[in-house]
Structures are given as structure tokens and as C-alpha cells.
Image 1 (cartoon, helix red, strand yellow):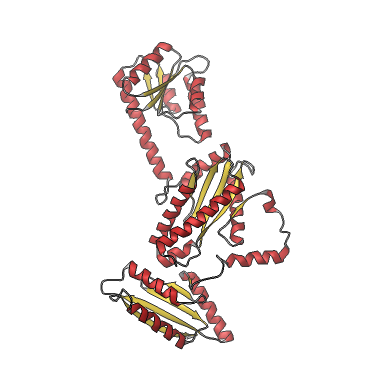
Image 2: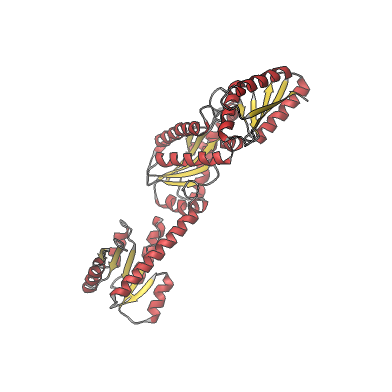
Length: 439
């Protein structure tokens, strides 16, 4: 209760001073206003914990002031400030009207100090409880950002009332993290990315998680294309570094961040229309190699002047990641199955060689994550850039070797097994099975 901030609104100077002195004597912070208009002007700059609002005031009574206050808070996207009505009248109809409008309580003057203090305390505590429950319902537990419900409640108001940049962040190739390293590692990457976003934006920016690996940021103020470019560069650099710390320097997944943005209010103020525009800008980034940004403009909808040749070049780049591959390709179950079946069709139609190797780690007391990660590093170093790997579980790795014979695969398996046996994990065994393709 100490240091709670109370605003007392009353046109009667004596009542105002008495209430102020009483509250200050009980270690409360107190501000005063002599009219409803003064209160509304005060609320544009401040956010007190509670308002004691007299009903009978000239020009603008307490009921009208309350209505205008709630309209202002709604436009500004602010939580409703608890209001206790004060009146010197003994009128049940007036009390009923105040409570029906949504006031937290109703106190008749002259009031008893203990009763007033108890009702103020109860109202503030109830308000904070509701606020905490509302925050829990609108916050994503993993990242602390606004969830879908919180985004749907706040972003339309922000777009309607403020200048800024509505920005969608999408993680590229994140599915591979879950497929290869497991969902626990996926959550660790998402948490790390959320921390990166939090540190790369300002306290006044609004951060949201709107999907598994899709985020939204409303950057307050005019940041422009240069600001979006700088943000994108920071996010990509820091995400790569974080993934290297979490999964090892050779984690081999081309993870990154693609960013699509739309300026507000230049492209409108309706969130329902602005979001698809930011999403369209994001799609342009995905078409042009990922890990970049685009800011929507009216020119974005202009016909492509480069014709079908340019469109073909853009579409082929969808399949590209960061430059040339420097290690084997680690794929998830669906992608690996597609690659495997495609290779078999090619071999049956055109001939050629290919082989598959299954590596399995074994240990009496189970294989530790550390041992599995160490084997993944060893295996990655032994494979070439044309090879593909499916980590089917923490202990099983299926390797696809295009252009290799069964004898080549046997030699590779023997080399990996020998190096593993000579390493620091002698208590973890390694079984290998080799098959020439097509079987």
C-alpha cells in the first residue's frame, strides 16, 4: 500500500485537501485535480494506481469524466485505471449507475478513514491480480513476448494510434533444428533468439510471437529502411553466433532471419490490412535467398520488369542458402525421405552408384547427449558436401552417399568406427551397416 499513487478529483477545495492529507499520512503518493478536464489532461502524461472521482462537479460531472477517461485509455491502448466514485448524496440510483458503468467501488462522503483506506487497498490489490492474470493469458511462456491473443488485442490499437514499423521476423531453416537436434534444442534456440530480439530493440517497441518460429515487432517511431536493415543484420549475426554456442561451431544448419516490414501510417492504419503487406515483403525476401529484409512500398505490387527469365532466377534462389555448402547436408525426416526417393529414381533410370550407411551408438547405461554431439561432429568431418545425413534419433545416423559404391561406403564406415574407437568415448560403442543402392 505504501507509495501507491492516488489521484483525487473534487471541485470542493476543503474535501480535496482533507483527502490528500489523509492519504499522505498513510504513506501514499497523492495528486489532485479540481475538474474532470484537469484529470483527463493529467492522465495523458501519467498512469496512477487509482482515481478517487467525485460525481457532483460543475460543467463535467464524474460520470461524463469516467466515460471520457475510458475512451482515452482504449485509444491509447492502456489498461483501465481503477476508479472509486465519491459522492455526498445518499442516492441508491446514483450508486447503481456508477457501478453499472464499471467503477470499482462507490463511497459516500464524509468517509471514515479506515473504510476509505481499506477500500483503496482492496481495489488496488484486485486490479493488480486481474492485471497479472491478463498478462499470463496474453504472454508466450517460452519467450515472454505477447502471444497471439495479446497481439490481436494490442497491435490494432498501436497501428491506429502510433507511428512505427510493423515488422515480421521469420526464422529460416528452423525446422531442421527440431528434426536434427530435437525440440528441446529448438526451444533453446527460440529462447536465445527472443533474448537477441529483446536486446536489439528498444524498451518502447512491442514484441510478439505469432507462430512457432514467426515473430512480430512493432518498432515505435519512424525507423525507416536503414533501421530495418541494421536490425536484420544484427539479428542474423547474433543468431548464428548463438546457434554455434548451443549446437557447436559446425552445426551445419543454414539458420537465419528473414524480415518483412511495412511503415505505419504511410501504408495505412488498419492492422488487418497492414499485416498482409508486411507478409508480402517477407515473401519477397524468401524468394531472394532469405536472411535479408524488405520494406513494403506501393512499388512492391508493380509488374516484374525483368520478365520470366528474372522470375526463374529468383525462384531457383529459393533453394539456395548461404553460399556454397562446406559440409554434408543434414536433413529432417521428410526432406531426407524425398531426397532418398528421388536418388533411387535417378539411379534406376540412368544408372550410377550410391550407398547408404547406418551408424548406431550403443552403451549399457544409455548414450549421453555429449557423446551424441561428439559423434555428430566426427561424422560431419568425415563426409563430403554431396552427402546427406538424417539423425533419426540421438543414437542413429543414416548417411546417404550419392556417387559412392558399396566398397566406398564400407571404407568410410570403417574409418569413422576406427576414429571413434580411438577417441575419448570408448565406453560408447558404434555399430555400422552398409547397403549399396538401389537395393
